[in-house]
Image (tube, rainbow, N blue to C red; front, side):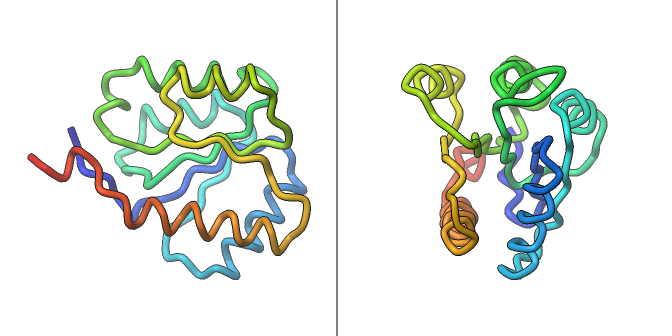
Length: 144
């Protein structure tokens, strides 16, 4: 098992270009050193994760996307032995939540489920909390 790479890139899987631009502005404002890599669909993100030598810090994924949705993507990552050993936190970051969606997410060992706040300041605060939490978090891989 590889250690969590807190300096690694943050993978954002979001098909709405307006949301991507807004997230980009907020990440710039927050000033974290992590590179942010955006994907508009889950298949592109999965292909990248399978081929890259980079070890991402965390994945923020929308649920409702074309081609494969966030649940299907999470399942493909969760059942991929190579990706499992990278210890990459996978978080859903979506517009709405239902009880079924939250239950299904945690059944796939998602490490967080967040509804996108409606204001820019709330969105900034949520992203700050997420990043700071995972920067402080200790992963099992830190105990070889």
